[in-house]
Amino acid sequence: MQKTTAGLLPQGPDEKVAVLWAVLLAAWEAAWGQLRYSVPEELPKGSFVGDVAKDLGLQLPELRARGVRIVSEGQTQYFFLHGKTGHLVTAERIDREQLCRQVEKCVLPCELIVEGEMKFYEIEVEIKDINDNAPSFREAEIDLRMSETTAPGSRFPLPDAHDPDWGRNSVQSYELSGDEHFSLAVQAGPGGDQRPELVLAKALDREEAAFHELLLRAMDGGDPARTGTARIRVTVVDTNDNAPVFSQAEYTVRVPEDVPVGSVLVTVTATDADEGLNGHVKYSIQQISEKASHIFQLDSEKGEITLLQSLDFEKGDFYKLEVEAHDGGGLFDTAKVMVTVTDVNDNAPELTVSSSITEISEDTPLGTVVALLHVQDRDSGANGKVHCSLDGGVPFRLQSSHGSYYRVLTARELDREQVSEYNVTVRAADGGSPALQSSAVLALRVLDVNDNAPVFAEERYSARVVENNAAGALVLTVRATDADWGQNARVRYRLAEGRVRGAAGARGGSERCRQPRPLRPGWIAGSLDRWVG
Ligand SMILES: *[C@@H]1O[C@H](CO)[C@@H](O)[C@H](O)[C@H]1NC(C)=O
Image 1 (cartoon, protein in one colour):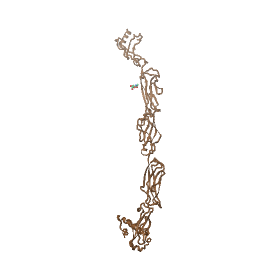
Image 2: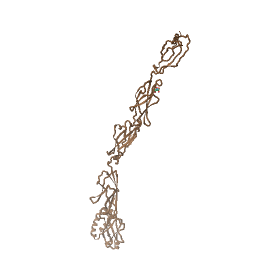
Image 3: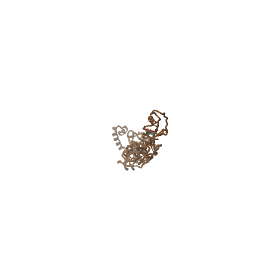
Image 4: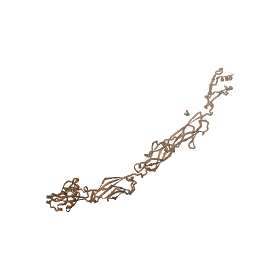
């Protein structure tokens, strides 16, 4: 009575102990009537479990008449008795993994109660596992970061896969695919569980491959087997294992000396295979002469070498620099930079008068040196080759002596009375294209020599004089000129003894005069008196 009631009444928490007792007592009495069945999980509703009527020797009409029913523990009724056939069938789909998580034997007990006879029978239905679950990883993507200096042989634990199925239907093995750098090791845990580990099989090199994509596969032992996968992405963390490398060990540039200030003469470049700071290249000048340090500037980021000051071929035609490229991790490379400055015809010849005379006597012999000149051109080659010349029409010539010295000599006789002053233009031109030139003027005054006699304006003078003229009356004026200069041109007049109509000439007299001027009439009159008297 008690038992039946217990089996029929809904169970509250307080009654659990009582029910347990009742079941234990019943086990004594009903041991003879215990039935065991086993069915795979996941059968559709109404699937056959066992022929209870036959196994208990009950007649089918009896079953119906005596009020036979099935009572399961708990609230869910998993089975019921099919009245017409006396078969125990599933009342719903049964998921073994939901009922018995990690239990090897999953048994569902229930009782068959024959109300009319006040009897009950225990029935145990074992739910057998089928491979209805695939192994799975908690996360489908696994991200790992490894330094590229990680030693081969290093191990990294991987998450394990879970498969709620039991036994062989649960996870049995792991597999790794992806690339040769990695292999898989599976350790046995204390409870016999499998712990996959990633093993670095081959040294990493971020510069070769920064990422490695792997696939971890977990397999169960069902038939057919099911698998679960997780993608593993290994990011290789850079270490500064690469030094910057210059694109050239030597950079050679030729620049004309007139290249403008600020121009980029050459760009040096170095590359570093590392990433981030380890690959960030900065440039600096390692070796440079004091002079060149004021001329060239190196951009530390761009590697551009620019001109700070104008170049001058004449002051420096070659510069050598040593540049360095260093990364953020202290590795570096060096390269040489050779700058050859080429000449541009930017210098005019310089013409200097080393010594000269400013006055020259007109009777100076031919070939007399009047000036010594020095020419110089700071350019090189044709740009610095100087040719000198004199402007035409002067009685002088140039004579080259000792390379850069020239002499100016008289080439013809001088005549002060024709040209009293010369401006001799000396020109110097270089061989550049276009040529640059300069000039110097030598001013020369020709000094007089008394090489000209006075000359009367007329060869013969005649005059008529009235007799008995007053003494001192003007008879005539004579004029003589002298082409010379100064004292040499000063003319004095004197009457020489002459004959007047055959008579003896008058006594002579003289008078000085600077310029030809009229004779004093009185003087000539006196003479005439005497001639007459
Ligand atoms: C020479 O040059 C000077 C100064 O330029 C000038 O005064 C003079 O007239 C020139 N003489 C001749 C002969 O050209």
